[in-house]
Length: 321
Length: 275
Ligand SMILES: Nc1ncnc2c1ncn2[C@@H]1O[C@H](COP(=O)(O)OP(=O)(O)OP(=O)(O)O)[C@@H](O)[C@H]1O
Ligand SMILES: [Mg+2]
Image (cartoon, rainbow over all chains, first blue to last red; front, top):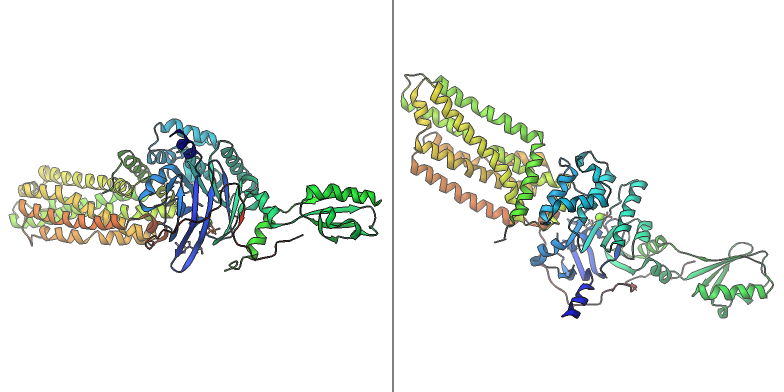
């Protein structure tokens, strides 16, 4: 019994398997499978029309999948379990959708009532504090700037202390300062162990905030931690700069040094493709020194998540449909 | 059917009431329409001379009676026609539907807030007409006819039943609309047919007695129930969000999914080596 509870506590927040949603004969997303662990911030990346919002709506029980299955917050997704799942999750849609004629406080009171929260007053004060909106509680939402509305939307999503929070492009249309605000908030949620399913097409956002990301373009192209996606997709490379052109680089940049391939990059610089930069870099350095070369610099070159994303999405035959 | 939660119902109703209080067109309609609809009864009350035959009085009072029923029919239709498309317009429909709220709670919460003021206003107008007739009518039969048991019963029954029809039909139109104005115009139009039925009584094509009032009341109740069944059946989350209902869902057997901490390339056809 105790063991069961333990494993139950560790059960994934989301298990999605072979999920497909079609509108007529067009697929919004197709055969999508992944899992999200509790406490994870999971990034869902994809170009416009990739099916991100439709996925959120499907997992948020607003629309039924055409085929496949999912377990949301430990409950299998079905028409009958919708209400039960909705009690455990929260969704912030692309447009935060606040009642503009109601105050911040009144908007949150509605949702506190809909979730049946026990002590709504304290809870509302708490989430407003979290998003730094406590002084604006009495303002009409219609008078708030876009960034502040987004914060109220986040406060609303936090209200019921959900097992999973779905945030659909929480920074779209925000200026850099407001975006950073939202980023900081998500980072603080992560510290507090909130599970966040974050859709975005802003890669630096995903890279900064997410433990793992999935790249979607109707079909899922990749899933993994940003770091691992990078190393898996792109062989690492070392950039070597020497004081003078090497007389015989082919004798130094050999497979024995861990170098798979090398190309000159300008006059006295070389780009080496390596499997393991941490292993290859010291060896190459020693070999260069032994050969009497003056090493100016040797550096591991990184690929950003953006490189990964563009590589995957552009190579996808369905791109630009 | 679905169990309703009083707390959630109250939350929806409270939010609706707060929104309406701050919506000028609704406050305007609630204030101005009743004034317009009081014109005819006042004229009837003051214009009928002391010597007019009682049959003519009955005819005039019948018309007054019909006019007083326009309020509970038309005002809530316009409010209800706004209720769903207005939320869609503001972008609040989707967040609302992602909460545990049941459709019954949304529908009843919204309906109550549209119905209660309209029916309340209708009753107040009727009471006003009776009071005016009692103190100021030149012909004593006016007050007597207005306060006949069958007239009071008909007002009491027809006002809420007409409001329930209007709200149902207005909500149904609202749920399918993308344009607030079109929804409101259609909603107002659709609120009129049952009013035509009550016109049979008003124009004394069917004489009004206690039993005709009850009979017409039951008739209205039946069409109200039938129409609301349709509203509830089609008030479905997917339809409200996407405009169409999904085909039947089919499950697919278990398959490999990607666990936390693993990386899997699902499909990738381009080159792997860059740089
Ligand atoms: N209600 C609908 N009816 C028909 N097709 C739809 C519907 N909703 C979405 N689609 C289609 O499904 C696909 C995925 O749309 P979706 O909104 O999920 O993309 P997205 O990844 O959220 O895009 P964006 O980045 O622009 O928000 C698109 O081709 C879209 O046209
Ligand atoms: Mg989207």
